Length: 419
Image (cartoon, rainbow, N blue to C red; front, side):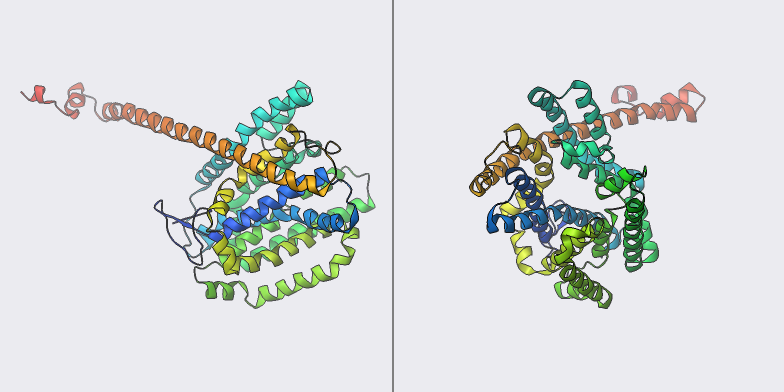
C-alpha cells in the first residue's frame, strides 16, 4: 500500500484502483500551505508599507502565512515516513531506489520551468548571460540555497527545492535513527541538537559579528540542520498514525505530547508581545510552534478531511508543487513588482484572484508536459531494458557451453526445422 496525496481521508481511508491509500486531510493542509506562501509573496509585493489598522492587521496575517513552508516540511516528513513508521511498517526500499523515486518527482517540472524562466530573465530583465548561466547551474544542482545572493531574484523561492533535496539525501539515515531509538527520543534529539546548535551559532556571531561564519548564520534558515525539526515533526506524526479517528487522537495526544503541546501554547502566548525583538532562531522556533499548534488539531478535525474530498481542493493539491514553482516568476513577468503597482488593498484582492488562476493554468501545463516526458522516458527505459535482455541471452548460452552445436541446440527449433 502506498500513501499519497490523491484520494480520501486516512480516518476514512479508501484504496484507489492504483492501490494507493489516500489522506484527504493532507489535500486541505497542502492547499492551505500553498495559498499561504502565494499570498505572502503577493502581499509583500503589492503592500510594501501597510496603511491603516486593516492593512496592518492583514500584514500580520500574511507575514505569518509564510509558515506555509513549515507546513510543507511537516507534510513532506509525514508522507515520506508513513509507509515505514506508520501502521504498515514496510521495509525500506533502499537508498538508490528511494532517491530515484523522489528526485524523479521533483526534477522534471522544476527543470522544465528553470530553462524558460532563465531565458525570460535574459530577454525581459536583461540579466547578463554569464549571471543567468551561473544562476541556472546553481539551481540545476540544487545548490542555490547555499548562495544568499539567490534570494534577491524572482528565483528566490527555489531555496526550498535546495533544502528539500538535502532532506531527500539524508532521509534514509533519519528514518533509521527513528526506527532504532524510537520516535519520541528521535524527535527530542533532533530538535535539541538542531535548535541548540543554531542558537549557539547566533550567540557566537553576536559576540564575533565579523566572523567568517556570519553567512552560515543567515543560511541556516534556508537549509538543514536549521529546518530539520520540521521534517522530523512530520516523521513523528507518521509514527503515531492510525486509520481510526479515536485511536489517532489518543495516539497523538498521549501524556508526553500533551505536555509539549501545552508548552508550545505557553511559548506562543508569552512570546507574541516580544516577537519583533526576538530575532533568529527564536522567531523561527515561535513560528514552528505556532504551526504545530494549529496543524495537529486540523488533522484531527473531521471538516478538514471533508474539505479535502472536494474536487477543487484535490486539483489545487495535485498541482500545488507546480504552482509553487511558477507563481513568483509569473508575478514578475506580468509586471507585478515592488513599486510597479498601486499599493491598494483592492488591487491586491484582484491580483490574488487573477494570478492564482494564471499560476494554476501554468502549473497544469507544466505538470502535463513533465508527465508526458516521464511517460516517454519510462517507455524508452523499457525498450532499452528489453533490448539488453535479448542481447544477454545468447551471451549467457555461449559462456555456458564451449561447443557450437550446444549453443544451436539451446535455441528453440522452428516448425520448418522439425520437418
